[in-house]
Amino acid sequence: MLIPTTYETDAHILRAVQAGATGYLLKDADPDTLRQAIRSAAAGETVLASPVASRLPAHMQKPAAALTAREPAIVQRLDRGDTNREIAGALTIAEATVKSHLVHMFSKLGVSSRTEVVAEARRRGLL
Image (tube, rainbow, N blue to C red; front, top):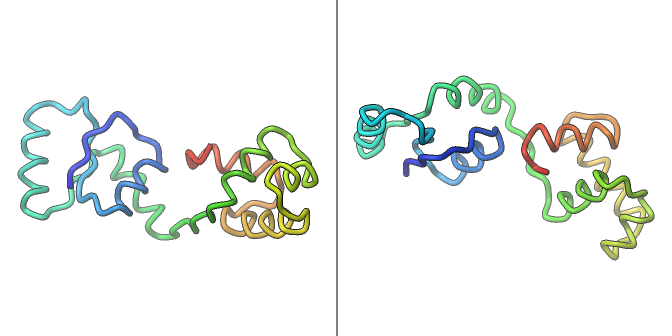
């Protein structure tokens, strides 16, 4: 599968590769590059646009742990400035559960504060 796209964010790239894409090409590629990419992908070769290829190895060396289904909702609430109590009330979970999710997200995202969770989520395209 070859994905021609305008999206160049790390989150989009990683999702495509994790979903089985063998190629990720930016739509502004010239026609000759696009034709060659189609041929290469059809032959089973990996095709990555230069800006994409230069960033991918860093993610492959240390793959990011995926957030659970609940954690993006918590990140969105953090971004709004909600307290743990407000997050718990909005998501109808215990405040201790919110704290547990935060500890797990700190580890997954390699951060040590609520503010850093939001900043890293933005950097990874999760918000």
